[in-house]
Amino acid sequence: MTYDRILIRYGEISTKGRNRSKFTNKMKMNIIRLLKDERIQVDAQRDRMFLYLNGASFEDVKEKLVHVSGIQSFSPVVKTTQDVAAIKEAALLLVKKAMNGQAASFKVSTRRADKQFPLDTHELNHEIGGHVLRGTDDLTVDVRQPDFTLTVEVRKEAVYLSSETIPGAGGMPAGAAGKAVLLLSGGLDSPVAGYMMMKRGVEIEAVHFFSPPYTSDRAKQKVIDLANVLTMYGGSIRLHIVPFTDIQLAIHKQVPENYTMTSTRRVMMQIADQIREQTGSLAIVTGESLGQVASQTMESMAAINDVTNTPVLRPLVATDKLEIMEVARKIGTHDISILPFEDCCTIFTPAAPKTKPKTEKVQFFESFLDFQPMIEKAIKETETIVLPKAEEEMDDLL
View: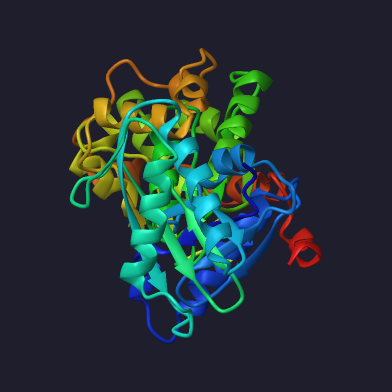
């Protein structure tokens, strides 16, 4: 059986009022971008969305669609005419496909949007259910807890049937809740933090600090690969790769060793804040988890936050490492993150970093350095990579 369309259910978007179209249009754009290589068309309606496959493989589309934030669930749909015999035959084929040669229970759930249709809901359920039972073995009816539900929607233009409901990513469409800068390292935590913010509708501008020759091109590629994985969850990402070697060397020359990590994080935050301003972002996102390492104590966070008034969002702050690893495996970043190519923070980590740094002390140590020219130079020489497609290309797709 060939599916000709997919029905998408909105979930949280359904709670929106007059601005609902803002969210549905954003999700439509994200889907088109993600499925750019397919022949699909998208029809975003107020209460649902249809994807017209136009011959594209449902299985191929399904593998990508499950990642799109904002989708509560979706179902492959078969379209028939209003002829009752045609409806029953399509229902039988769908049920056989859903059973996959095994015993199962089912129920029929009909929605009659066309009130002129000659059979009412109860009659149509009875006609379809009886025909399906007669045409299958090892199938029973269970209206309370069926193995699957055959849904039938009768509309004026056609009848739509489906027997499979696939859970979506949930949340809100990426980009619908504004933009934020993500400090993206090569580790496990920051990609998960980016994913969690995208799931809440945030568009990501990723910033990575690169310190050649102490960090290699393979470490840089690792971060590019991580950012590329994140684009599967609903939107393109601009990755800003900041040259950071000169700043790190200056910090390690001037600042006492146990304070170098704090000072390094503070300068990173200042650079990220300037990129945030340049890109029209509203917040900074980090992958910090409270108490996980020395730079993630409350005292360290307070000293680092001292350099900016911009909101710093830490979606992982109350999660432990095992929880973070579980999400990383789920979203496909885990195996990339554990590759043995270290980032600049790992390379320059002091033997005994200060776990309770004093803000006034780090300010004093930094007062002997003029960071501003180095920060300006680093931002000027930043390399920006757009993954997977530039925003300008969307106009041709919509």
